[in-house]
Image (cartoon, rainbow, N blue to C red; front, side, top):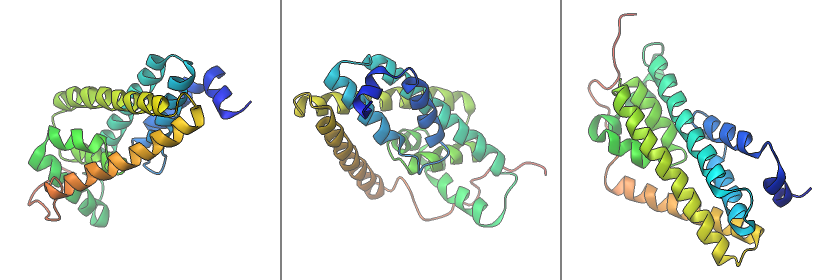
Length: 202
């Protein structure tokens, strides 16, 4: 069974996709975005599995991963010192300055999303607001993956492997553009805030 057949026929695809995307929320080396785009591109080219199944699994995985990162940041804020705490403080700058906007931008940056979501937990970003924002960003991200995968399949004239390569290249290019815009608009600053991490009695 080749990879295309596996994507079309495996009963484990959706659980694995969900777990991979969720794990990416706290372990960025996992290339979940490229995985989702590849699977979506194959589905768009072959018609199987149903697209909405893939996008639901990816969106739920993204939501769970974001909340895992929030929980990790929340715990680390009061249990760490030195470089780890300084790193959280640095990552907290966009949350302090831009709030929900930083979370939205971070969702589309593979490395940035972990830092931003952990910083949201570390700063005590209101959880109800966080839930609403991450529901929106996870849905938007899944929709983005569906759009890129579908367009890539059309450009590839229905060839699954070509569609996968086009989708991966498009994602890398768009990610680079978002990162450049983020830097130029100063969403992230090198200046540490005076008080960015929540304080609790130890």
